[in-house]
Image (cartoon, rainbow, N blue to C red; front, side, top):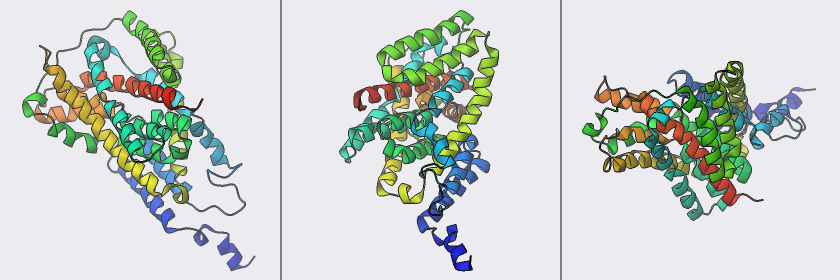
Amino acid sequence: MNFATFYNNSGFAHIEWGNLIMILVGVVFIYLAVVKDYEPLLLVPIGFGVIVGNIPPIAGMPLDIYSEGSVLRYLYFGVTKGIYPPLIFLGIGAMTDFSTLLSNPKLILLGAAAQIGVFLTFLGSLCLGFTTQQAGAIGIIGGADGPTAIFLSSMIAPELLGPIAIAAYSYMALVPVIQPPIMYLFTTKKERLIRMKAPRKVSRRERIIFPIVAFLICALIAPGSITLLGMLFFGNLLKESTVTDRLANSARNALIDIVTILLGFTVGASTQAQTFLTPQSILIFVLGALSFVVATTGGVLFAKLMNLFLKEKINPLLGAAGVSAVPDSARVVQAVGQKEDPTNFLLMHAMAPNVSGVIGSAIAAGVLWSALGKF
């Protein structure tokens, strides 16, 4: 084998500018994770996956994620068939405390209000020429829930799975950048200083009954949400029952970590420039950003609307936590609130709309799947 043959069988001979751009994007993701601490558990696997996915494969060797028989393709099977997202929901359920939500049930409305971003983006995508299935998958980015976005797009628009997944996780990681300007724009200093009443103590019986009753209600409203919410509430029941601590610990630690690694890495590896860098993908990123902005705005404005009818006012910053980026959006609410008053602690209150946002985005996905799925 001479040097020319060796060169032609190397990645150097086939790499394109698009691959170099995507490799740079992967490096930026890793930089944001390591230096800025933006969702490192997501951006490090995704960023390195982007780098791996943009090394040009050798003809005839099943190396990349789209080659039949490649190892990466088998790992990606869990994404394309919607296997990984329910497992992540199981782990989220096992680490979620619904006590604040049970203590102040009206805050669930903020999680519902934030879903306006999903449906307005759905309508906007239709106007831009996407099919109804594609528009539904793009719209769910506004829920700021990566697993839900992956699950729905794998069911109704698998051809857009790569850009939708990357867009959803990118905006989840950029919550601390995107949300604060919106929160300041739509609230006054007086509103940001509102103190919330301390939540009441929720009994163990309530915490055990809640995941069962909530699942039945949500599943009957939107049967398409059974897979995601079934795993979410099952994981929560494992936690709250206190008799299955081993299972709950496995779900919220080892299981969710393993699945996050596989999902993040394979989603990143699916961003091969030749299939990913298209005008359609760029448009999806723009629509995803608008969807997230609208969702955050919807939550904040709905909190202000509620205050018109409530004696005990809600701090409208809590509305920003209505998106499903748990717990980052709740942390952003806490950070913005404490900039105004360091003694005002909003984190636990913000977790109520935050976890209701998880439920709301799953219900929205179930509704879209039921309405748009090809059965």
